[in-house]
Image 1 (cartoon, rainbow, N blue to C red):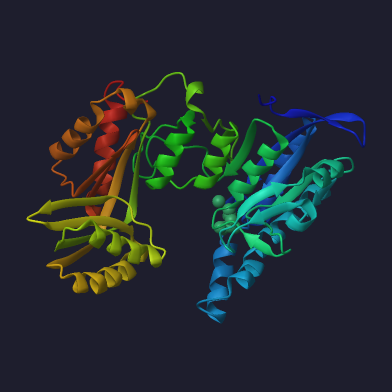
Image 2 (image 1 turned 90 degrees about the horizontal axis):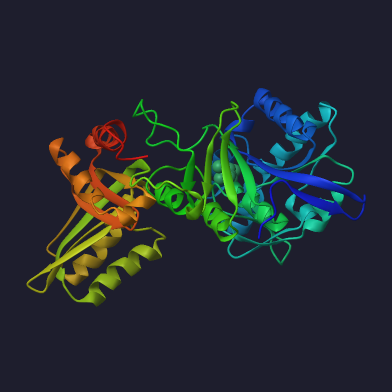
Length: 424
Ligand code: ASP
Ligand code: MG
């Protein structure tokens, strides 16, 4: 059983109880001096309510991209250990600047790097995992400080090397800290005030979703709605910890990401997401033996390319296979496929880098069989061709031409959310 958040801790050192809240601020929330001051004010408000605040930060907006660029300029295939040394520095600037801003408001704050805070990692450079967090240094520092600020996205491995968690990884740090503290929620501040029923830039009637299950959030990030790092959502699910997604730019209620049982009402469709960053590859007439298919996808995975939807059918002992990769992987995937399929004697290899994926997500789909048919109805009424379809228990995705994306998202949103109570 989890303690209520903020959990009250008995501090042996100071012999007092303290209530700790974990807050994470992303790159746009810290983008410039004005934003850093605004975040410092917010943290000060939390402190004034009587809480100690454990803060996790990302690098300032654009900083990590700039570091990646600098690394590549020096060497396109850098030594990963050293790349991590560079990549980890963006967050260190953030912790220091934010601490200066909070201290200038008269609130005792201290930044700590991951060595000092005891955040341990394991696994490969640039995509390591947090293994343990020794909370004792952090906890005893709260004796003297009201706010402790830690860098997200990094830790120290058993060889005392700094490693990073993979892009967007500071969300993981925040959830891991809340889990280590055994509190039941973490506040994650970004530049959007929650998850919407569709991208508000496309659908002006998109509504904010109050509560979303972990599974829905994972399906949505997999289908284009990049709000949180998926590993942070998995970690929150594992520890039964509520992620409160909030904006640091306003004070409106955000979206809570939590377990299914807590979501009383289960609309069949919770949101429509889309991803324009897709490309499709089709191989026709390759010998239908499963070992050929295994061979093709093994070679693609050797290039560290992730494959999404795969569709295969067999005719006269020959296979036709279509699959989806992201656009930045398209040319390498095409080259790889051409090389193998030549040797396997395939008839033809075709590619299309102008496709998009539209997905309809909702936990209530499990018990509501009509959703797939409704999706296909809407798209066919709008004369939108569907190239590929993929379904999970709680998601239906369609691959369409990229030019149809906005049209598809708007039509599906209208059907599920704007005409009667079919959706949320
Ligand atoms: N600064 C890192 C990145 O841009 C980690 C993060 O922002 O979560 O990927
Ligand atoms: Mg982020």
